[in-house]
Image (cartoon, rainbow, N blue to C red; front, top):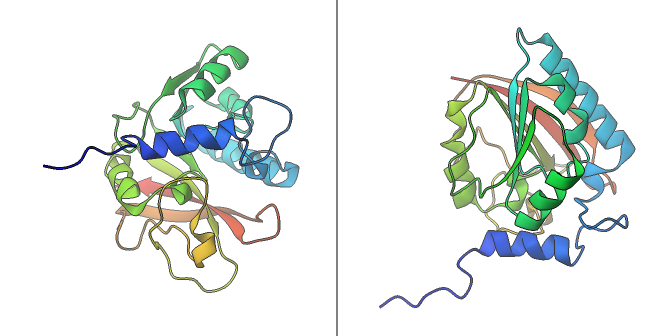
Length: 219
């Protein structure tokens, strides 16, 4: 007989602890998603690039922000969308965001994007989310991405040559410690796309590695 796990929701528990114990730092608010969501150079460049992409589309997109965090970035993008659906795995964070950010075309929901059904939409934003997840969880998410027309992915990658997609245990850390990073086009994920276009490359806050944002046009 299999012994029940003491942590039935390890990823959810890990992310709750990240915010509760302020493991990504603090700016005197209840929830803080780290320098990657607050460093002005990083954030402003990303917002400008994504806003430009949304503007060139024929119609304003319905956007699903998977792993929206403290919404310091997402709040600047809502105005360019038909509807903005922001989700995260931490219930208290979603409650905080729902109270703090209110727009007619904006909704928040608590979801485990590896386990739960995703909202419908035209475009997915995955900004420095997959890098915190195990390969098995990423594979589960990848299978759901084919329901969208565009996937905009941002990952923290090493500056030097690296071996992609080394596995980790989901949580605060990322693959950078293993001289690795997420590449969805390679095994074991093998994301099938019509086109992959690099949208933005910026130095990562703290000087270790760089952030690469890629737009995938899905099959």
